Image (tube, rainbow, N blue to C red):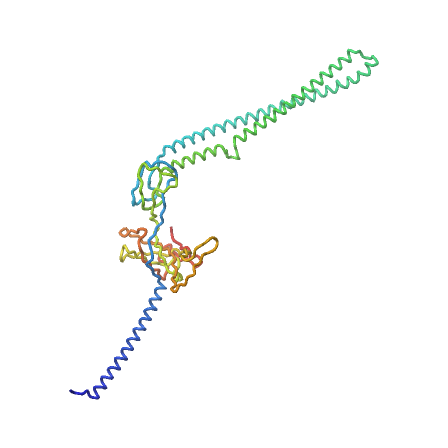
Length: 398
């Protein structure tokens, strides 16, 4: 058997050293590459935060009638698309039409009553004026009789000493006394008539004030007529509310009723999915929130449509979430005595409005989404990045 020479041993040793050196270089490059890749991924992940904890959302509005009654017409089906102003369903309007006719009749009656009371008030003013003339005449009569009474009293007082000296007869004295007594009676009657005239005036004025108050006129507005008009307006609204219209473009959902169902005020019959604005609610870890600002552009991918990208814009970041390890007992919080070796970052909802629409790939509420927030403002006309002080609101055109 041939033994290796010294030259061959040296060559083998040199090759082994080269291989070891090459291995160290390759290992070092692998470690450096991993560090660079990890740093790059970390940087990209913070510059462009991404999450798969997202869901497509839309505003849901429950449709409830504002009047009660039986549904006589139903113009929609479940999952149907409706435009703003479309008739959804109609409640039997006949009872409300009857109330409207009654309210209009009561308005006419109120207007006639007010006209009648205004005429009565005018008659009362004329009556007061007539009574004032009668009172003035009675007062003048009292003044005349008082003057005559004063003369007769003075004349009687003059006759008394003359009668004692028999300068006048007893019949003359008796006649003077009779005239004075008659004057006193006439004066009392005149004063009673004047007092009666004053009482009649006060009573007429009281009736006039009562008539004016019943008219219920305040400036240029008559309260009785306005109240009747308000009842008519309310009845007209009830008739209008019998026809329930779509408040915006939307999809009908959860429709489980037909004609003949009795609808009650405030009881939701079905819901509308608002088709004007669609959102992706993405739950990002709190460590990424510094890299997210309202007005930034975002990319939304849906699990249901692989490879389809939707352009969006960040419109807001949630200000609060409910803590899962704190309970409230009375006025004091209940804090559990636990030791967490692994700290999990909290997640906050980020609202992203989706601006792209594709009829072949319609959005549906609840679809699972993947969201990436890009480190640049959204290039959408009418959308401007919000400042940090107003970070809760993005300027989105409506």
